[in-house]
Length: 254
Ligand SMILES: Nc1ncnc2c1ncn2[C@@H]1O[C@H](COP(=O)(O)OP(=O)(O)OP(=O)(O)O)[C@@H](O)[C@H]1O
Image (cartoon, rainbow, N blue to C red; front, side, top):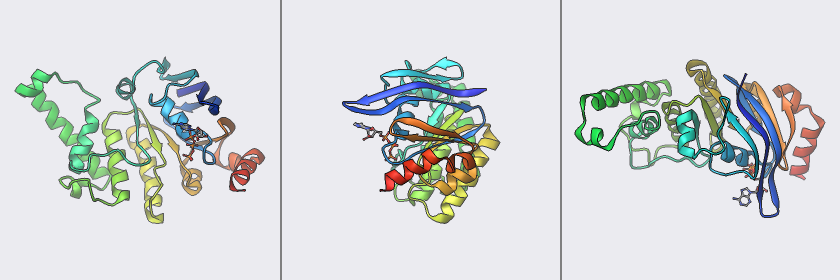
């Protein structure tokens, strides 16, 4: 069964058709990559699914619910989490605090209960902290828990961002170019981390990625976009030999 269903998505910027009838499904528990040459429409899909852009037409269903009308914060509480290409962390906060921020979408506290710090509130804080520390451990970040995020290496910050998205209780993670800016060794490690996330937390993962080595080695399904349309979808081996895909990439390189 598909956790995410995108049907006939269209998005225009003036005369540019960023998305021109994009449809695809993401089965629950799968790892799906969205690829394509520059300007193909990958980020536009992510921005529509995560509520940052309002498409001109089409449907986005998550867990059977049409989520297009919901604001982004409501999408987060439904279980859609994402990371950003250029990171969206708080540099002055510690690594642990950055991950704890993710937890605030999964439970609600009233201003009064926070101010008074009732026992229930203190218990929730303790539980959130314990979970955040477990996640830091899982992502080999425990030794940095009390270090401010600002100034840490880019590859480390990417892991912090992923840990924060998991902390938010997401059922589906949208990873926007997670391999960009990483060294070879870090990309290999990232592949293992993404697969482990899916296996350990039962997450569904959708990634936009230019690093084909990573895409081909970890994806269950690859969706190829070009000029706002899906031109191929299938197993990694199938799409990489598809003549339309080869032509789109050769055209982009010309
Ligand atoms: N905010 C915007 N304003 C105007 N045009 C936009 C905007 N965002 C995207 N576009 C255009 O929409 C098209 C699709 O862009 P999009 O960023 O979704 O592609 P992409 O596949 O993510 O590209 P890249 O791999 O370079 O990040 C492009 O022609 C782009 O120039």
